[in-house]
Length: 379
Image (cartoon, rainbow, N blue to C red; front, side, top):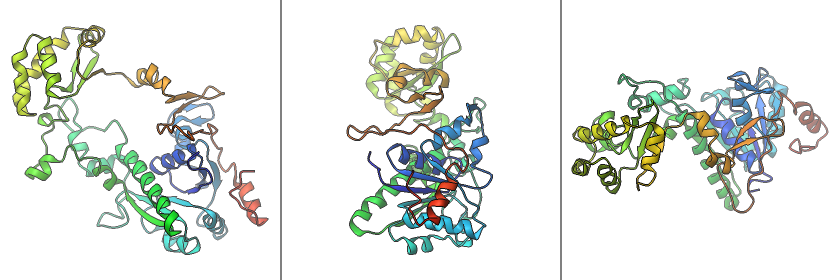
């Protein structure tokens, strides 16, 4: 596997760090999850399937668990010994916490110059907000994402996806792999300052036009991605289900306008998104409102346009495409796992679907260190 032999020490909690270290484990990295005495919080969050929560199972498979109390000098020594042999160190404490514990980045890299240290924080290690606590929703709010995530009443509502968490996870993974690639030449590791807010805002190149070009806040219902484009929005069907039109190229507009018997309305889309497209929106809405989702699907199937039924999560995770791609996997115990999205032709991932109990590897790691052996060996 691509990351075979890589040693990753992960102190992070909740979603960004654990998700990225699990992706590394899926591709062969040896990952030790350092948990506080109370355990990773998501062990207890949400519904359970078997002995573990679904959330924990899908962020911690294939890892080993070691409980360390970082306020204990003896446990800090265990951590430092693990760092001495590690390739990657992931932490997500508030800025300054690791320094106060005597485990700052400079010390870690002085002991192990090849170590790549990745620090994930809500607002990063610098700036006026560096000490402000925040999780995904607060980051999305202060990144502008919530302001364009409007409900039916036109008011901001809770985002449906943890975009800040996942953006941070993927940006951190990218940064770590870049640092490891460079280490092959220099022999030296690096330190990565990863801000969740930075990561999410970097995901917005397609929606910052009004801000950068006109110095104004977007009006969501008039913008290309949020409803101002008749061919890029969601419509209600006769049975209460919904269909999404997801491609705004003009050839698609013309094809659907002809299909509803109103080819002249296609010209409205040539002027770009905005309120002027409302007659086209109304015409499409009427066409969908007169048909059930099944009828819409049958009607649209032969047309050369981008469209999709709006599935609920249960339907999506049961779809033949998702199953065929191995994105939903059932282990021998009948527990469900999210599959591996990065697919290599050579050396594909071979995930270890087992999930560690709290401190399952603590005694073994400590015994190896006392005996002067590498604590990274699994057996």
